[in-house]
Image (cartoon, rainbow, N blue to C red):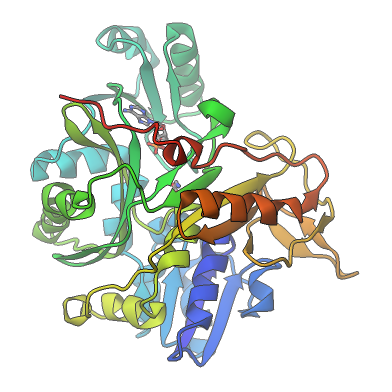
Amino acid sequence: MRVLVVGSGAREHSIVLAMAQDPEVTALACAPGNAGTAAVAEQRGLDVTDPAAAAALAISWKADLVVVGPEVPLVAGVADAVRAAGVACFGPSAAAARIEGSKSFAKDVMTAARVNTATSEIVDNPAHLDAALARFTPPYVVKDDGLAAGKGVVVSADLEVARAHARTLLDDGHPVLLESYLDGPEVSLFCLVDGATVVPLLPAQDFKRVGDGDSGPNTGGMGAYAPLPWASPSLADDLVRTVVAPVAEEMVRRATPFSGLLYAGLALTSAGPAVIEFNCRFGDPETQVVLALLRTPLARLLHATATGRLAEEPALQWADAAAVTVVVAAEGYPGTPRLGDVITGADGEGVLHAGTRRRDDGAVVSAGGRVLSVVGTGTDLTAARQDAYRRLEGVHLAGSHHRTDIALRAERGEITVPAP
Ligand code: AMP
Ligand code: GLY
């Protein structure tokens, strides 16, 4: 099987590495990729927002399977174009990707599917903002209604901070979503979905805030771990039954069935699990830990999902181990990152590349806000944490920053689901 992976982050590096281990894979390409994927896969240039260009590449490279990593190409219709060209594609249609691309669409689907989520209100007129905010209590949750790479959300107890963020979004012409605050630990549940068939992967947790102790602004994700030692063993199955399967069925009912990876981001609140968001693709950085533990060959699994045969696949196999990833971010991230700095140690084991590129002189340099995602594994979270942070010591990037507390509270047994 010839597999073409679209995207250029550590998620795609992790997908490419898992594909390389599948004996069914005979050729591998990544477009546009980064300095890390280039070491394992052929590199092809691609504007990932151009569906026709993606389909043309799939044909010319003779791909048997295209796997689309990021949300932007999916929302733009890359999966539709690739499928229309007759190539199997792992990733939803643009119509189904709206579950991530429009938070108000996602709310509408959840209401129809009777899935628990935060109460919310859309504001598209600045004159209505203050009255709308007055209908909520602190902490305020203010979101960009469209795609914002995880950075469009402000959660603050300070009304002025909430109002200022909403105003900035509205001034830029973006509708704003106000939400009630959901308390409790967060879970990222990735599910392979093929119409009404839903197969969950291991639940994981990611760290959205930039600083230790969940301080500072939201980012695309600064680290992740799996499995969740504090969660009930039935968590994934419970969430499939109460959240993901009803949503998948609602998408089928609307004649926009979801095919690909449906990511439910949830808070386990005292009133039960509640959805924070749906994403239409593998999450980054959770994919780096989930795929580090998956033993089932990935290409076959994603091909089966893409071609409507997921229900025929045997149960997934997982390593009896834990994985932790720590993101190394460029100076300035999540604001404007400093780019072009030389990275050393980036070819070490477990070092996945995100924003990197190889310069003409062979040096690997930073080329994005999240630069690397260092993955450690071990028999338990303690060992996996040690492995990740030990590997991180071998990496150097001037001005970079990372969190030192990824999976620490879980390791210490400090995470609990609030009692009803
Ligand atoms: P989102 O872009 O919707 O995933 O939000 C990013 C992050 O903001 C989430 O992972 C949460 O940590 C936080 N967040 C979003 N919505 C809420 C909410 N309703 N209640 C509490 N935290 C939230
Ligand atoms: N880990 C968060 C995301 O991928 O959106």
